Image (cartoon, rainbow, N blue to C red; front, top):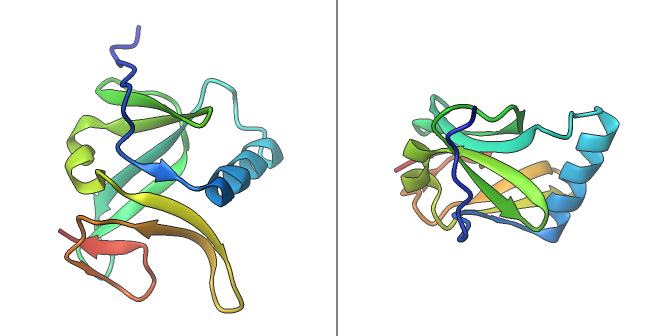
Length: 117
């Protein structure tokens, strides 16, 4: 039994490009329908924290959001680091992948997947 609550406002934004790429990954890797997109942080990376982005099963203590039809899972404690963040998909000559535009980060590293708060 899950203790997650659906929350009306979403703490993060997924761009159309990110949603398109996530839908492609979900289909390509046959991700089960009950899995959501987990967005979070973990210690490590060159600036102190790294972002977590991947499909996962809901866990106790998660908040669940719907962002443009995508079920998003986030641990309650991570919200203070992620509030207002935009996740985009970048496809350039030197850089291909998800980018994290986080207004809470005081410093980011060159790779854009690590930050300090």
